[in-house]
Image (cartoon, rainbow, N blue to C red; front, side, top):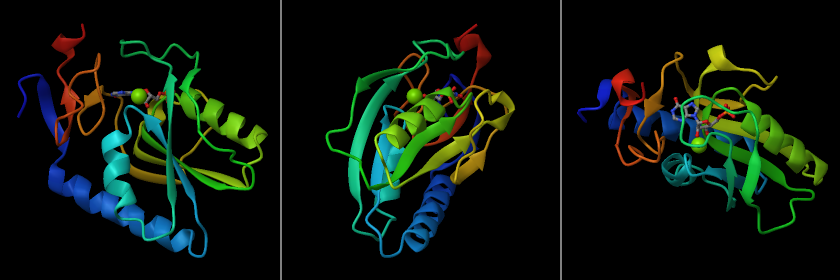
Length: 178
Ligand code: IMP
Ligand code: MG
């Protein structure tokens, strides 16, 4: 275990199993459709890579980069689009793929924008859900795990851009950011 990680919450094996379950559920729910999977970078990149391989549909993939956090651990509330989609989403069934739903500010903003652009449907799939910190009225359609209000890293999730490469998800020791 990494010296800055206090506790492992989800091991590689547990993540693999849960991601496969989510993929199977999405495959079933979108049968006959070709959803556009929109990964929110950077945090979702590993989850997205594993999830798409569990989805047995003619799905397409896009990424957006938004910033809401800076390098701290507390959300600022302001959301900025840094990289937008490369296609028109009018009439598309969109599934937004996120690493963690925290305050919900990022996703409620993104969902609003994609709705305005005329998507046929918009759903949210998040690997982790931290409902205790929710500020925006948003709930995920698919959620891997519900987590407590602790700062977590690994499997794509960072603190100040580090720890994304840990193969598991764990709690970052508070001494690392206090
Ligand atoms: P929200 O807009 O507050 O829901 O923020 C969502 C984004 O904040 C996520 O995509 C993550 O990048 C980041 N975030 C929130 N909580 C954590 C955490 O515990 N560890 C790492 N990143 C987090
Ligand atoms: Mg992020």
